Length: 531
Image (cartoon, rainbow, N blue to C red):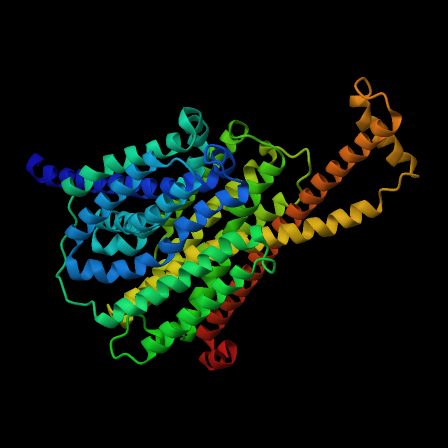
């Protein structure tokens, strides 16, 4: 009896080690990506940079990172998982150590660019280690759900641990943790090997040219999406030049791949109706999921809330993401994807709508439920969608997996940047609109306005004797109040827009489910319903 139980317990223990290793790899990569972008306002002083200049740190990281996973698929297939894992983790450790030598903005940008390259294998290794822990029957269900859940945990954890790290040593304090995690992950790669797969010579010379063009195109798009809102879209000519270069290079990739017998990316399959629909679904999801990272986080900064005031909220977000991922893992069965998506979109829409009623008196306590809904909905939505797309790629053959990964990469990396850029631009435009409306109502002959100016200027009455100067201070303070309220109204509009997009996606999904149900009873309606 004990002899039979021992191998089973050993397998469980080994699986637990692989799951823990996967979680550590995801956490190491996620913290490395988020620590700088989440603390730009705190570290820009130590780097002698303005807020706009500090944003180049995020752009430098994302420029190479958004496309590298596409190249790593073939590199892994040709040179083997073992060598891929060892070189990948060593490269990440070296990139982490380089943060110690950062002394100014220029060196930080260079190191962040190198870190973006080195971090690309880490997320791939995280997926592979999670898949290694489960039998084949559960790799595209439980394993996939847990792996994607791990990708959502780094963002709230970054907000929780950043204050202490910044107090230790600003930039160097932040990335000392990344270096420590990378050194912990290093022996894991050597002590927990992945199951080897047969090597095959799959890299062709034309692949190198196609990838370089793809990397330039995606990199230019990433830089434009990160920096466009800060320099403003039509004010900086170099933004248009980068966008034009991306169009040229990506068009060249399409032309080259269409004329190859063994393309790096199957463009015809990517242009099929099924994959276009899949990409559109993921893009809409990333846009709605940006409510938490691109709108809510900036709203807290507008209110002047510090990390210690938001700690409980981020703990709730972390717990909700984990709970949503575990629930998704339990529900990941054939035929459940549509039901899971309905629940997820409903939660996203409800959470965003609840946030759209914020005021200047709103505090984290009023957003606990709404942000928990958004976090759980985000964790629920992605695994079934990815499993469906991955299954479609496998059905076509192993060569289509890379094309699927490019689609997934584009929708998640570029899609996330698009969400941040779109909502950030929307908030800026709506703030100007609301500021003009509010300013039109501020007339000094209005007794209420005069009374408010008097109340605001009263704080300076003991320091300023001149009545005109005192009145000017009151007007300036009223102007600041108008700007703050206009920003709050703009963020409410952004929350409401996210809710509307989620409801629209939910309505389309319900219509598709209804069509499928009707098609089971009357197959003749399928062409009309899907045309």
